[in-house]
Length: 71
Image (tube, helix red, strand yellow):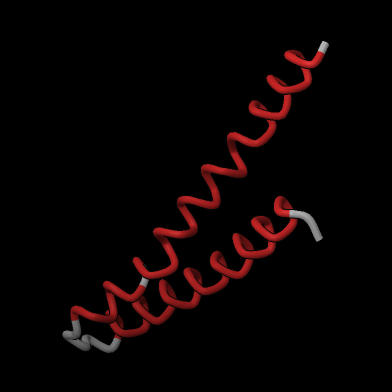
């Protein structure tokens, strides 16, 4: 498996972890639990999710530039 496929797979798993963290935050808010750390748990997968998302976003532009330079 090459690097791009690993990044895509990591991005998918991070998005699932982020979704679970947001759902846990919503549940805690509806139960009126005052725990700040529950809200901060969503940031743990969000930061690497942002990094992998930006990489995947830029990938087509970078690869297109490399193809044009090779010509």
